[in-house]
Amino acid sequence: MNLSDTKVFIPEVPKEWIQRTRAGHTNIWNDSFYKNELPEIKLNPPIRGLYAERFDDGWYWVCGCSKCLGNNEPYPYIVCDEHNRCETCGIYRDELEGKTAWGVQGGWQCDTCHTKEHNDRKTAAIESARERGHSEDDCYDIDKIICPLCGTENSSDDIYENDELTCYVCDTEFNVTVEYEPKYTSSFKK
Image (cartoon, rainbow, N blue to C red):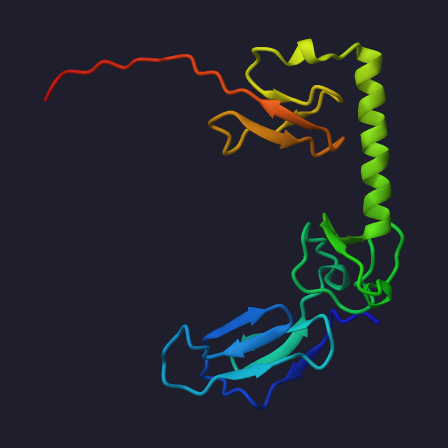
């Protein structure tokens, strides 16, 4: 079922109200953040995939599912039941039976597909490193953090002192030694 043309009036909310926040599928008018003395109202849409939007004549439930709308948002916030499925195998979220859903571009991925893709990337990276002759020596005194096993560049964000990391591709735990080269700036005394 495509929700793209859906527009359902919300009689519970006066058209004059403009302060609405969203928390997942829940829409909240006049939440305590606004401190406006108006009563707080929390409503969930009648169908997943809709959210509240204000028009000149009042508030309406409208489609927020990027797949129904065809705008293909990279990380959608609202998804209808029809499109709430694994991007890889197509299993519906309600069939996960408590297992993890991993956020990926376009939606989410079930734990089974995520684990398989991770293991495939891990195997390919380690094989590629072997073919290139990558070794721990390639990681010495360079300006980026390279995994000593698979040769993948890992993020240096927030690493300012010696630390232990786990490679996000091959799961290898390794040490990082941070070396600083002093730089100087001179300026006139004020």
